[in-house]
Length: 471
Image 1 (cartoon, helix red, strand yellow):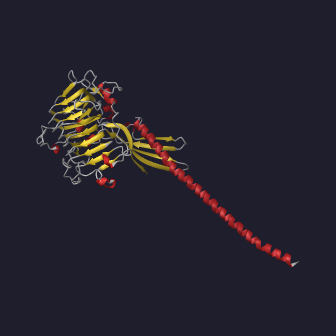
Image 2: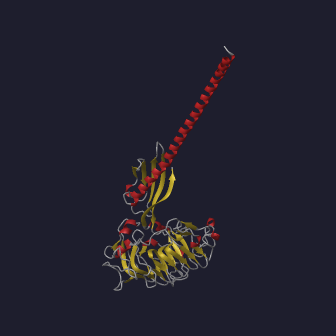
Image 3: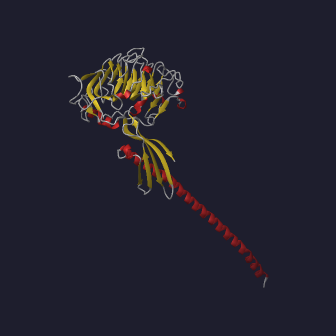
């Protein structure tokens, strides 16, 4: 055998192990790549299922919200369970419960638990709270602008317990709030939780998402709502992304007045078209002292109040063009949030100078109608007197739907979403309860005292998701 052939064979014998080694290395790399790809695909599928599961649960939450809002799910049905599927075929199961019973005070609050099934075996469970907003949840609210003169304050009390300074003296607006003059004053100014320059417990600015401007709230007499216009240094201001939309919520009031839903009112407002309308030939009605709640003989049944008020029986309201309260006007002993003296007024309401409405002036130590009046000497139930008006901004001889004169004390829940409230000649007024208008302005010295029990006096029937957590 030649030397050349022997060398070739030797080289061939050495290449075989190298080929085998290369094959093993390539096979190992392929195995790693395949394993990594499979693991990645599994992770992607899990992530998709994990994300999809909570999306399915959210669809279930929205379905329960729809059932509650449309009245298909009521407190009488609690506890309730159900299930459903999405358009992609994923399933969810839900449970809903509430402690609310007919006649209860307070908002209807539901606890809803939903489990959503994603791709594969991935499931996620969320728990939300769904509740309806009270109609009277602020001491003062203006759709457009709230202007405080000097010495205006807002605080709170509880008419059931008699406790004062409960930290719920809130004022708010969809647009601007202006505080002028000196800060401080009021029955809660010396409480430890209040700063020396704090005028109200909380300022609420709504529609913040559309108008996130700190200058919307100006407090020239004390400190700005934002200290040095720095949002990080706010001490009593809260912002809310959405507006409170109430200006168009007047259809049920028009119905109570007996006017067409399409009737926008005359320059002076509306007339009560009911056969049992209160007042003289001009439609003017002076409310008598000791007035009881209306009934079927002298009032009109108001469906909205019957459906959304604290009581369980039908609510009737007096109907009038204009209303004037006397110097001292008490309510009948049976009046309460559950059985209120309700008024639907087409044009305006006048409170007299030095008058007292729904205030226990005959109680020892209560000095009504004077500078010596001490708000903490009383704790009136503001929901016992409810005043509603759909009148537009041009109504009223003073240009105000709700007009109060100097040194008045008033305990009432007032809802006039299209009209201005306040006006001229209205300094030094104690307003117990809640005042909701298109705008509020005064000459100073108004003290708003919010009654905590108003939170459940009248509900809006508009349900929203308050809290969202994953279990």
